[in-house]
Structures are given as C-alpha cells and as structure tokens.
Image (tube, rainbow, N blue to C red):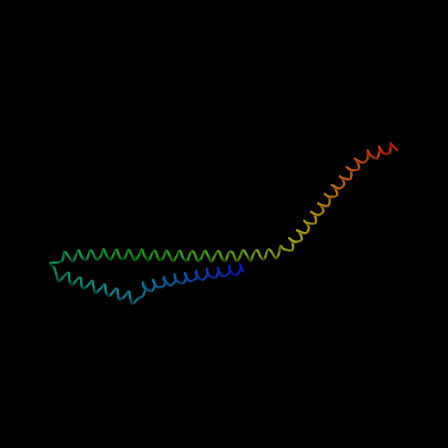
Length: 178
C-alpha cells in the first residue's frame, strides 16, 4: 500500500511539474508571438509614421503654437522612452523567469538521471558481489563458531583442572587415613 501511495504521489508531482512547464512555455510563446508578429509591428510602424507626419504638419501649420508643440513633442519622447524602458525591464524579467524555470527543470532532470544511474550501478554491484559476500559471511561465521568452541573448551578445561586441584588434597587425605 505504501509503494502505491508513493507512486501516486510521484505521479501527482510529475503532472503538476509538467503542467507548470507547459504553462510557462505557453506564456513565453504568447509573449514572443505578440512581440514579434510581423503584421502587428508593421501596423505600429505605420501608425508611428502617420502620427509623426500629422504632428509635423500641425507644427508647421501653426507657427504661433510652435513652443507648445516642441514641449508636447519632448513630453511624448519622454513617455515613449519610459514605455520602452518598462517593456525592456518586463522582457528581462520574463527572460530571467524562463531561464530560472529551465535551470530548475534541468537540475531536476539531472538529479533524476543521477538517481537512476546510481540505482542501476547498485543493482549491478549487488548482483556481482552478492555471491562473494555470502561466501565471505559464511566463512566468517564458521571462524567465529570455531573461536567460540575453542573458548568453551578452554573454560571447561580450566574448570576441570580447578576441580582436580581441589580434589587432589582430599583424595590424598582420604588415602592417608585409610
């Protein structure tokens, strides 16, 4: 049951990660399409040319308001520069976000691949070493058994010698009495 729960949890995480990845890709594509669609850029360029020609015509036709037109033109340029700066900053933020997402995805994929490689290496090593380890473990157990038997024999022999030492004076005393 635990394995199934773990696999279900991993499946949910993978699906969430894939959904986020697809959504970020769609955002990037939406931005790129909106920014680099040729028709939109041409229309904007045409609108700028028309506006520029109209403003130039207005400034030439109304000479008495020339100072006002110069100020309006300066303000318009400042606004355009501000808008451009905002768009560039926004594009940089989007680019940085996309790079962060891609970097995280690459790191995640590399970690998964590394885990797979390590697991495969462990399986290979285990299959190669299992028999040798089994023989070595059996040999160690046999040697430990021999050491334990020798220890038991030594303790029994010491006890026997000690009993004999204690019994010797009694036997001699009994022999002398008889």
